[in-house]
Image (cartoon, rainbow, N blue to C red; front, side):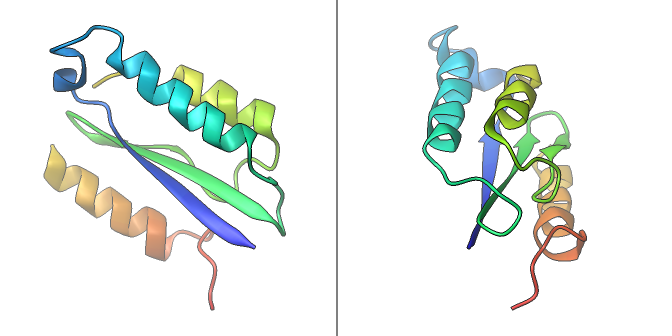
Length: 101
């Protein structure tokens, strides 16, 4: 069992040098997800984006199959670090999707 959280920089600067960088980031996340043994009692994945604001794309307990995860990754868009840090704390430690060890 494992919980994996993608923390993705979706700020506008991600595309400053190369306009395809954002697609590369999303494709990387989808390739990793595609290699995992996804399931409620196996590997769970969540994704948080930060740019102009922090956004939970999906929680650890939201998807237990690869197609739903990759669809959510595809829906993410390239977009204050302070809001992101608060959101990450909520995502990782307080939301019902976090495991108690």
